[in-house]
Length: 243
Image 1 (cartoon, rainbow, N blue to C red):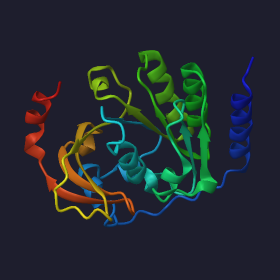
Image 2: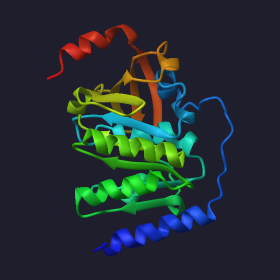
Image 3: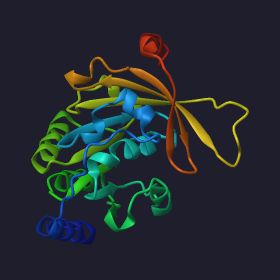
Image 4: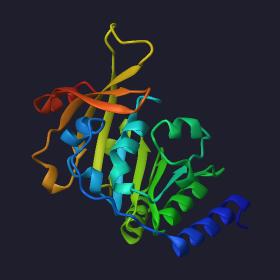
């Protein structure tokens, strides 16, 4: 028997499919809030029809914020769907990332199997720009199904996963590792910032010449991302210290 929440979502997705109005944003230079991510991921702001993995072992480190900020140009005026089976997301926090709550759907399935079904169906729905979900484990078959669904719908799939997932097979076109770093003692308490190390582990061929490792500062008050430094040659050393 289909649960009420899944039936409601299915009806909502059909409605989006029938009434969708897609406004594709024009290509523009990155704003100051995107410059750090643009140096690492020059083409991700226009990427659709596939999966991006954001890996981090630290809850609240900033991987979700970075994923949303990096993907906003590609999503444009289409819908965001957040699949939150752990009930950890809140609308106020998502609104702080400059997301239009009128174009945001928050789904909280009770079972992991339901979460997988929701993500796959949402990825197949045209008019949905991005689907965000956290997965502890994905079988190769499930991963492939999600990749095909994103390709079919022309949708962006954002998968939040543990750092340990980097050793597992992946159907994502981008795999990005986020690690928090200690902030300087001079940080303004009224403008809290998180300093993050962002490493590109896997990317499309045209990105192979891009920087592989950057340090960025995420300012929580307004969601700005600023480039601190580019450390393309430091990637091997960082990998060697991972547990």
